[in-house]
Length: 248
Ligand SMILES: Nc1ncnc2c1ncn2[C@@H]1O[C@H](COP(=O)(O)OP(=O)(O)OP(=O)(O)O)[C@@H](O)[C@H]1O
Ligand SMILES: [Mg+2]
Image 1 (cartoon, rainbow, N blue to C red):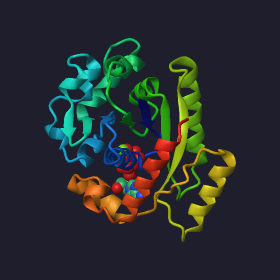
Image 2: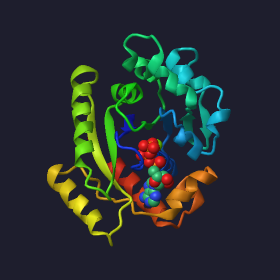
Image 3: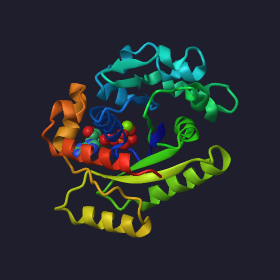
């Protein structure tokens, strides 16, 4: 079983889009996937077609220890979703010691899955720390439209810190280039720079800028359900296959 956080402390880079569509790609390749939404924005929950405001039992109740994770799972075809709702914000303020271990403690006994994918919020706060303490691998979506290395180094420092203090098994498996536009020189510059600074880390598959990927969440559909013939569907399927070949 591979346990993966999809994480980048920068916002709007394609974490949720990647989580949902990699999960869906894996599902199409007959893998059993558990998706955990650990972002209080609950966009993964929404993208899968569920209104977070109507979610009564969420990952928050699991983390608090009130219920087991099986009690909150929403089954969506062959994907099991542990949904989020805005309550999750409250975790920061709960007076619980060793709060970084709540997710690991709650999900450690999960079995029967090929992958657990965890969609993180855009910060290195307590929710992301929970994800990084539990997982073994990180996929880092990188929007290849800015020269974003300052933020990336914060993330790498954070990962090193977690590795040292909370989870020695943690590693970045790969960087996912998102919103790629070959006509824009900035896209090509960012790709070249990433390859130079972080050799071997960028997945070969780039996720192109694609309006269908932007539209799919409002319909509560994955890209394969919404527009199976789009470049977004092609790219996420190719990425999924590459993920199956690449381990950290
Ligand atoms: N390849 C793409 N082409 C076009 N639009 C995209 C692509 N990937 C993501 N988007 C859009 O960009 C926006 C941000 O993407 P997404 O929500 O996946 O990022 P995020 O990193 O999860 O954001 P947050 O940090 O707020 O959680 C969304 O509107 C999404 O639909
Ligand atoms: Mg998100």
